[in-house]
Length: 226
Image 1 (tube, helix red, strand yellow):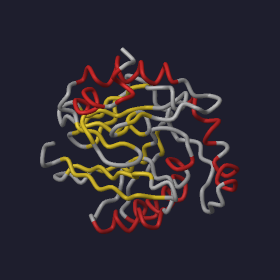
Image 2 (cartoon, rainbow, N blue to C red):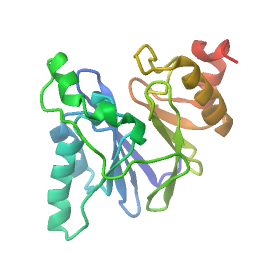
Image 3 (cartoon, rainbow, N blue to C red):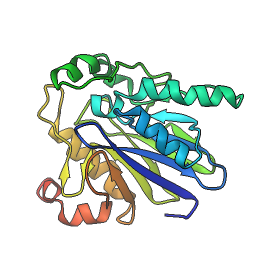
């Protein structure tokens, strides 16, 4: 990845979800991707890197990815107001995941988790839209299967992607939910992600990072599916 693209990962919630802070070194334009919880820890990391994010971005609507978004938005907007900046929006996922974001508090209670809140984004995203972050441009891809409205964000010049729970190192996202679809998930990986190139590095929602090439060659869930 080019040196101007900076990344910090803050694992949050009991699911150890990879909340990812992405920023451009020169302009300090930044976004927080999937703040599933522990907004105070995320805010502390933002202060450490001297960042006041321009957006909170959600890959999908599961509680461990979206449950802390509303609280973090409030923290960020206090800082932005002091600087005379426009409010920070929550953008994404695709609108088809709103039913999940409407049930975050109920799901959190079932897990004994506190502080997570239902959320409605300021702007849903659809495939083909672009997320501008200083000189960085992330393309939005719709990759359903884990959830109906799951999105992936790809910066082709930087050869970098944020894939949420679509693809993992050595695995793929769960599809054993009532709304899950394994065939859709595998098709999205093969038709939309792997063709982008073996050299693309990605950060996933849980666990270690990898590359599309490494997963194409060795991920057992991808070997017999095409």
